[in-house]
Length: 374
Image 1 (cartoon, rainbow, N blue to C red):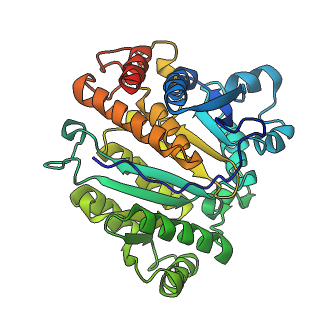
Image 2: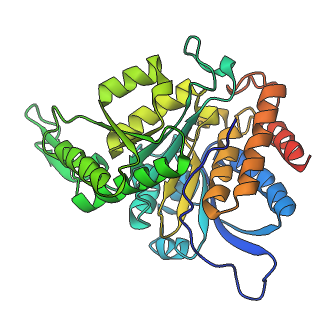
């Protein structure tokens, strides 16, 4: 199978005084629940890759997450944003704590980092490695290999809106869907570039809801066609309503090459994508700023009920590290990690589900590291 391909947005140069070996300064946020466990395995594999392929990783760990919030009342210090800008990349484990009200950590850490660091692309590869992991009838790895490009800084997630008469029978709640031409177009251009670079079927599908969201998604539709006509005539354009996209992802996932969509729809269809590729245990994603610092993470969440048990699948975290290296430009190392993980999947792992792998979290990391060192 071919390697997953992404754009390489970071342009920072290696530190002066080391002309033979690049050093990448990486911020590590293990986070909550099982996040530290899977992050440890991702780092284990990344260190083998760095030794084998001749670059250095300068890792700096931060304790942002639920435990810090419960201890100090602080979600994310104001200084953290500027500090994160000094890194080449960020590796995240998971955010979400059972003793913290939903939304506090997610909005205060995840969304704040994505918005303030202008990580305006959420990149989600949907790739099946083993036929037995797919719940769809008669679908094999050749049928499921596409990428979702999700706009990551606008839409309903911007948080504009409010309540009136809260808690009363006549309560009113509003949440505004905000799109700008600039935000839509930069997302579309990234998706067009990726489709061209990926060079599979060179087909970009816009997933929207133009028949109902006649203002916001008319903007997406017009920009999609204007940008395509202007600069990407070599890329085939397709369109599907979001409900149809979900339908075809289940019935004919082989139709897709690259999908581009808004923030909310991207959040939904990428979870569906995770299921058809084998589940959350293998799903990794990147929050990309093509001109700055990007952040990579497994998308399965903190899974607090499995904390400390050593049963959670670390492959999604390992793949997030692989994505990070590819975006940093360490393509050979990224390809080797993917090949090693695929070898372990084919030869060793019984199931992608927590507690059913046949190995502990740490043992899976060991297997991938050993296959990579090979």
